Length: 262
Image (cartoon, rainbow, N blue to C red; front, side):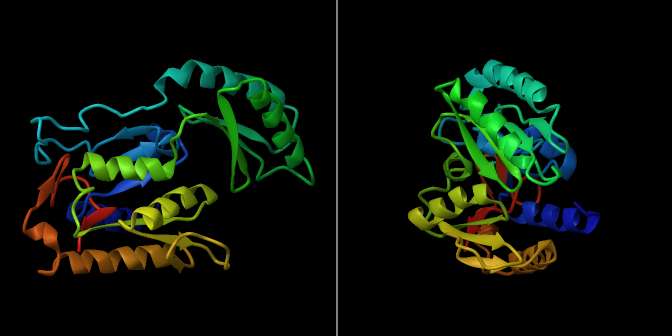
């Protein structure tokens, strides 16, 4: 992430509750993005934590902050995921260009740098390992196959959980905007389409089937869009000026960006 993009995302996060939902491990994403104002959801949303900013957010009905601790719906799978990671490291070490990544609650086998048809050996190895475990499944992304627990949880359910935990699910004037470029982001696009709580924006240089409502070409377009969102946030039309906080977030201090009143 460029420093210019980081500054724009920080500004968005101070104007609206904002989350980054990634397939990578949460700590890796936090280390890459380096913004304490954000909500982070790693491992395809199976590891969610709130902003690292003190004194932010309205209290919920119980007088507590729903984001005090990380939310990890697949925590009991961690020992098995550790074992799968070691198995795949051993299986893939002889395949040139391949790599294995531990993402806390899922394991990613990358084949972007594999020569010729060697990528098929990566896929076969992952299929063999997954076939030995009834409680695991294999999913595909861009030049990667992943091993995940068989739980009803993905980027779309993580998005829904965040909106509900923020206390915004029943707010008719809240619109969630999700920007993504990966096949796994379609789960979030579909969730927004089905719930009619917002819309998705696909980042892609070529036309392809998607549940997103809009498309932009590249990260530069995303940055330009977010800059306009920041400009609009200063206007009286932004409902957060009336009530500048929700559970786990306060305007100008903590997390912003994915959902906010129209």
